[in-house]
Image (cartoon, rainbow, N blue to C red; front, side, top):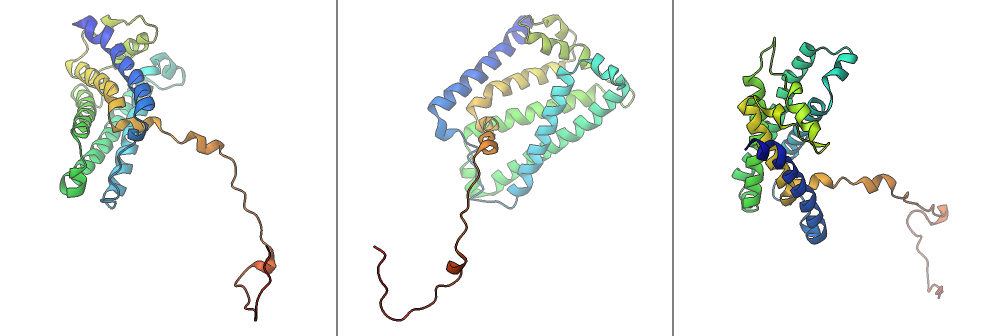
Length: 241
């Protein structure tokens, strides 16, 4: 089971992510969308969507820093363990609360607005469930094993395990002894990664990068004599053809 969870499941999730994304791009381009329901309701969406997206962005940045920035790097720039712990505790909790609040508002909107609720598929419900579970479990694990003075140092266990996956030599022994809540959070996170290509979350790979390199729109100036309303003329006009 240890080998399956920490040695095989990460690669299975990545394979499903890559293969599913390629398949979706080749055979379901018209389905590559958020399936926006803004046409049905926009007032609450204009609040819930930014709250969720900013929250999940901060959560993602926090995970990237915690998992891929070694402890010695932060020590070299003068960021000691206690200060890093406080940043992770308060910053991570605030980001998680923001993301959960955004999801709660989106779910409330879907449940209380009849057209939006009818447009909600079983796929959407599974996506929301797994996404919410991943965020809540991460917050729960952090708060359950942390206090203001100290907390569980995942940079000594989970982070080295994650980085070892990129060398194709997973250090599964690092996950032995990791608190159960952190282990469940990691498993649900891998499940979420595997589900991305098959849900509306696929739109995260649709950044309009080409917009930055598009040619300028050229506007031609008009003759000042032709600006404004055309003066009325008596009689017939000669044709230009």
